[in-house]
Length: 259
Image (cartoon, rainbow, N blue to C red):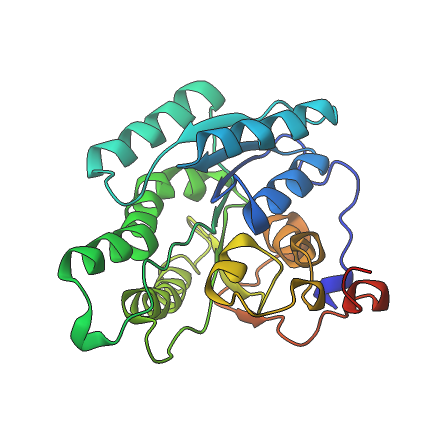
């Protein structure tokens, strides 16, 4: 079972992983876990303070020194993504894994009231930006030999989720398209999606304020499938849409909530 996966020590040693949304939540947890497995992690987010905290956590644990790359998908240009790819190649020489995890919902609003400018911002943050980033780094992933893309997906095809719901549907299509385009032996890249279901994150609390967070799994409880798909044990697995919802047991002590 993917949730029980435990990588071998240094299973990601010598590899470079780029994680978006790395300042907190699932992105931060995946970054720490990948670094613990020996990877050099590039921490990407628009939250510089959060990036610095993630950096310090990795460095203080004695893992390979990470890199910080502040970037805001909402306003980034094609040149910004090209510059990012150039910087990664120049400073680290390679890229072996990309985790598209950053997300921003904007506003939960009926479609007929949705502000067009906000629509464009949310689509840039959740679909256009990740697509352009992926496009920029594909050449490095193609020559890696173990290139892997993991997308944090979510079923947001629900009323009021507007641009975020459309963008997340687009991410599902991106997985399908890329996995087909890179399924051959030349330039093979694993491309898979993970829908963790509800997780104890700030994003979840912001949109479900009445929910008891103690009833939800922590980000650390969902990192194992990410590590599996990023590492050599995944082999040729590609084009998968994996759902973890309902499969993660919350310890009874947590489920009771604070005393």
